[in-house]
Length: 495
Image 1 (cartoon, rainbow, N blue to C red):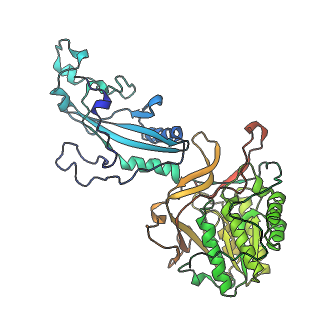
Image 2: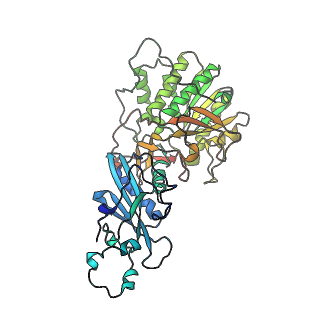
Image 3: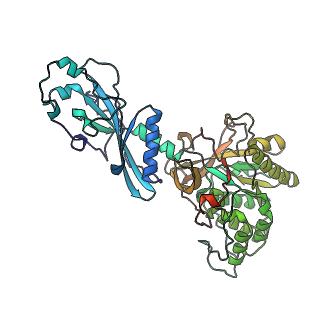
């Protein structure tokens, strides 16, 4: 009897498990991991399946692709060694489904076949001829590594069961959602903007709008000291990080501290920032900021020019309008990359700190930039935070890494075709940065700095992407100058 895979496969959706033991073992149903929800990846289905293919190829599997069905099949292998007639073979089956243009679900199943099950079946029709040598039949190479003959008919073998392999699905999750984001410097800008409408800005009024401080931030008190420098890493391109930064600014001014908010904007934009901070924050003032500064109109925009960051600048302006000593500092480079960029960023912050030694300074930047110790993957690379620590021994520098729950982020990444893609992506934390549901936003300081030079963790909750203020269609590649880029995190690190 010959079985087609659709008839034999037990597709588990709600209560499936990864295979950790022999399916025929009495303990097969015990201690197995059961998924409680489906993961929807914020990438096109073809990209998710292509990434899954790479996961298999890294494990030296050959992959058969049924494109029209959105399915993958791997070559088979035999765990262990058994005598002919008592062998077991395993292979993987992947089924993908498109939920939307950039939303996909990918389920990975481990399939197991036993020759003992096949032997008690009627021989397939293609073997109805008399077999003189039974041992030769049993010793045949049932699953050739370099061929996919019989797919998806499984070469006459009965399909025992397909079970979800969650460890492999987690590897796919890491490939898609724990990847470096890119900070793009240089490149071409779009045409000047003549009319700007920013969501949430509202109509101009005669009365100054109140500051939106948000909920109190637990644990921040030890950091609110005159002369302190607090560095906060990714994730930029989200609503949550600027919201927490606003709360920290409010806490600082309530303690009568002079405050400086340092952002990863080109230092050449300092003049336009100062003009906006001194304005009344009307629509015309906002439009002038976005038109004069090319930073907000780049073709490739990363999380540094998100709407949430612009709203953070507006909150700083409102605090200043209420009489508080608040400054916004642009400290990034417009063209430099690598160590040269770190040097220029550090130079700008060091100069400001030396001129304003008593100011409480909060800086937002990528994860790598804020580390206060050298990185492990490049002995010549010196992060911004490490340079500040060495140059300002009398001024405490504290770096906070951000913990969060899985959510979305606007960022630029390399897609599977090694092209820059700036869009909304899902973002998953590494295990040590995973925030438990119900945990409030707070600062948790460590007893000692970590190996990466972090002094504490800032918990911000579930993430929601904040797209750029101004979005324009990307011109043809041939007509634009590709920007240089710095990774906000190293390729070997998880976030």
